[in-house]
Figure 1 (cartoon, rainbow, N blue to C red):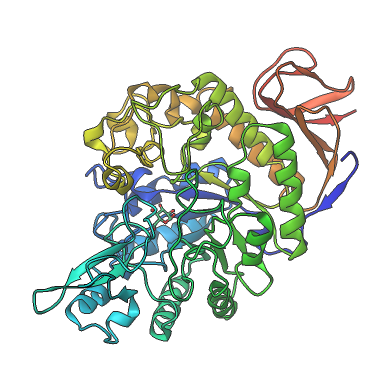
Figure 2 (cartoon, helix red, strand yellow):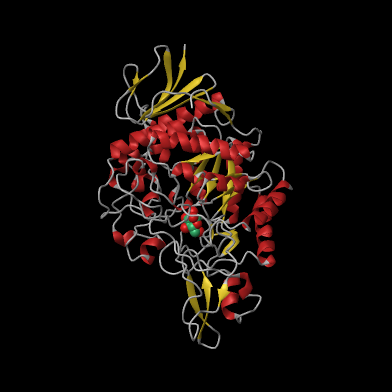
Amino acid sequence: MAQLEQIAAPGSEWWRSAVIYQIYPRSFADASGDGIGDLPGITSRLDSLKELGVDAIWLSPFMTSPQKDAGYDVADYRDVDPLFGTLADFDIMLNAAHARGIRVVVDLVPNHSSDQHVWFQQALKAAPGSPERARYIFRDGKGENGELPPNNWESVFGGGMWERVIEADGTPGQWYLHIFDVSQPDFDWTNEEVREEFRSILRFWLDRGVDGFRVDVAHGMIKKDGLPDYTPPADADSMGGGEDDVPYWGQDGVHDIYRDWHRLLAEYDGDRALCGEAWLPTLKKTALWVRPDEMHQTFNFGYLMTPWDAAELRDVIRNSLDEFGAVGAPSTWVLSNHDVVRHATRLALTIDNPQGDGIGPKTPGKPDPAIGLARARAATTLMLALPGSAYLYQGEELGLPEAMEIPDEFRQDPTWFRTNGERYGRDGCRVPLPWEADAPAFGFNETGLSWLPQPTEWTTYARDAEEADPTSTLALYKELLAVRREHGFGSGSLVWEDAGDDTVAFQRGAVHVLANLGSTPVALPADATVLVSSQPFEGASVPVDAAVWYVKA
Ligand code: GLC
């Protein structure tokens, strides 16, 4: 592999190289003081993101929603939920971000709506076979009286994927499909009316000035004809990603929809972008989502799922640059988001923890926090040196670990309820951020309320504490982002270097990058000058679980 050069797909659009910071609005900053973050809270903290040095923010959903799945159950796609503020608050936030040179990407949830959406309410009242039902996936049940679900599919959140409705005459009737919670009925994307409605929703937000969309469950929108039975392997991740040809994931029909949206976005100025959430079995298949006339980016979940192992990381980086490069798209890189165990914890896991399972009080073998943090800092140092666009998830710049001790009574993720507590779900990565060590709710708001309890030991992770400490994770992120920008790491080429089996090493222009994933320190060349290091060290050897950027004299 030594000397192999890989060149990122060329192009000057902002999304090819951007560092995009994910805001989970309910946990970012809470101006109203009700314990749930909001849009004015985001506006009030934008300066801290400017100082961090990100190019864009992506907001998880803040649209009108009964919040059965933390806003991923949308009842009105063209309005803001009162929990988060108003459309006017959104416009203020958007303008304030733009004024600071920060682009804004919003979450679009097209696979399903809330059961409180007016269309679904109309569908419930309408008769089988009606145009109102045809917007969703209603089917007659099996069995003598239709008492059995139409097929054997299992919901991502546990339990079956079908719910039976009571018809207008009071008798049990048809069933509707929901990949996720029972309150999240799937749209029928073969229906032109659904397509037209979403074109109009895209325009609604584009007209307001958003720079792009993160497309939720982009791999689920089309189901295989005939809805055939399917049983995933026992160790499958709930969002898919491990298996080929799942009748509800990654069906070819999705590509027509993205092409349509690509054309629509191209009518607008300013390189508006689509980023797909698609959990797929291979990077080759994932790259199909970002062919030149489809989405602009897709999350690199293959990278996120890679364990802390040098050979596997080298492979996934090489394959990502190859596969995305082959279709002219940038690779993206991501280590954490609101659906996975935070990487400061995940990278030290010693047992299997499938995506969506989470970690809670009864999980055996809790990861060592010091090892987790060292690896997380090294992993980010490696990631931010890679060509392409990188995603950060709020709180990782503080080195936040997963909140592993949330008492059962506070849990909110539907996964917890639908599996009767068998899977903890995703609450542990969604706890409100600590801003100030000595303030109520660590400065998340002024009242001290918090929709999920914040661990008391988060005092040391509070932003103001880290701002005062030059060795903090926050200081590291700021430095990495500044040097990344200065050297243009988001684009260009990468030349692989060989520094031993337990390392990942490459060169970006004049800068060398080396991550040590082994069990002994790795010596740097005699003429090396370290630019940034994921942890402070004495002497000339990179410690275990550390990564450095250096130049040679
Ligand atoms: C996506 C979201 C996740 C949500 C699911 C259903 O995977 O990231 O949080 O629960 O879609 O909308």
